[in-house]
Length: 302
Ligand code: CAA
Ligand code: NAD
Image (cartoon, rainbow, N blue to C red; front, side, top):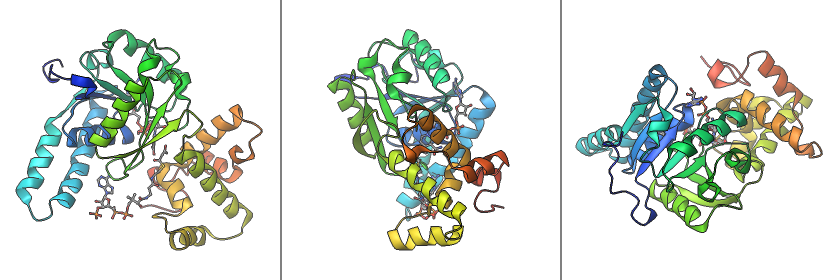
């Protein structure tokens, strides 16, 4: 692992070596965009089998990116693919993976206790300089950071799905995050080709704080029978210029994720009517209609 990471990194806080923990949908994308922009990446998950899937998802996605960027130049496309893939190593030991890391981006499942436990153990294994960040969609960064002794070098780096395509990165600070840490995260975001915005540690940061109530409102509209799913989606695509309608987006993200987020926020902020769980969505999740990943949500996928 040490040999994979160059030991001349962190000149003036420049991030070269990145550890991504969690090789699922988001972690694979984060590893890919980091490697595409020249960073050395260690991608960590719990088993070699899962990491094999991460590797093939990354290979497929980088091929799409290379084809798009170098339409008429096969050599350049191949070079981008090979170089990107060669910069990613797949490992199962999280503690070893942070030994020479400048930045850790955590993208494991959305569970506060698991994230806290992970960061506590990483805190003991990583050098002082290493910045820790979580890609959480809905949890509080301060709560995730509470088990570590490096709150000054802790923040949120919130990506959007599909990571290689979506251009935004939300950079989240907690009160203890130093300006230096924040600027390093912003600079890294820019280096990987994202447009960064600064966020406070508020529920859903900026995008999900707006998007989650909007999607929920669309489900309530369907539940009331005001319009069909197709018409709601057509309305927002053609009337508001969005790439996907809200119900298509719910299927794309996963209905279970939507229910989980709303339930968490509702528990914490019971007086906010925007966070009230939606009965139809809860019922669909119970029936196994999770969206694209289960083959059926508001639409059927074959
Ligand atoms: N890797 C690389 N490239 C990809 C890709 C991937 N995984 N997925 C799509 N692309 C590329 C395609 O190759 C294609 O490139 P060309 O323009 O060269 O053809 C381009 O992206 C568009 O893809 P498609 O033609 O396949 O499909 P599309 O035009 O319908 O776009 C989409 C698909 C990009 C997903 C688009 O529908 C979209 O932007 N949807 C909204 C997504 C969104 O809102 N995401 C945020 C969700 S919320 C979130 O993520 C936060 C959270 O915490 C839950
Ligand atoms: P996912 O289920 O696709 O992937 C999670 C991965 O983490 C799995 O491969 C799992 O094996 C691995 N994992 C679980 N515990 C681990 C541990 N202790 N150590 C190492 N690996 C572990 O989930 P995802 O959609 O990629 O989401 C990951 C995170 O990103 C969540 O916090 C989620 O809220 C956030 N997020 C998701 C989206 C989205 O659209 N899916 C968007 C932005 C942010």
